[in-house]
Image 1 (cartoon, rainbow, N blue to C red):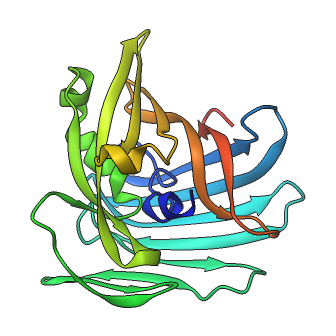
Image 2: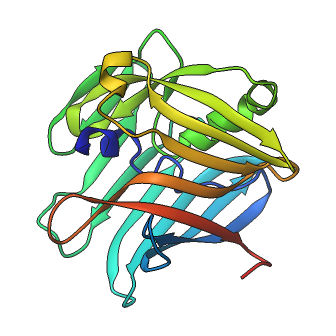
Length: 228
């Protein structure tokens, strides 16, 4: 399941509603089968003219030890540049830098990618892609996109499928478009609040590595400024 982590490298970790100024919120990551806290994410996103400009996520374990920091810069909402530092583990900083002709990636592997023919999405830009198509998803449409897999320096075709729309909650799942490949991966489940268009819950494999190897699978519940 490790390749899917690359696809979702904080793809839903920098989620916030459109606003001006700063948006501050926290994600609490719990084990799927219990209420054991695995780690916490502290988010801050800066907006100008209702567009994201920069973002920072600090990851802390259950004992308040720092796990990592990710810093993003938004040239386009769906395609940010970012640096992801994993604290205390033998991993180099992951860097992604979009340009006019394509994307430079430095991760487990390094290289340059051309822009794909479909809609390209990078990292936390996934949220802004969802916002741009929120009404279509609410109406039940399935969306396709090309998502950057930085550890493999490649684009991966994904689909977003709405699952339910009731009680002001829109639930959708993310999975590979290829049916054969999708047999080997559990879908990622996302729950949005419809009136505010904020992410309420993320359920599935995360981008946060564990000290013993692999990455956490978690249920992440988000609380926004004013709710904390």
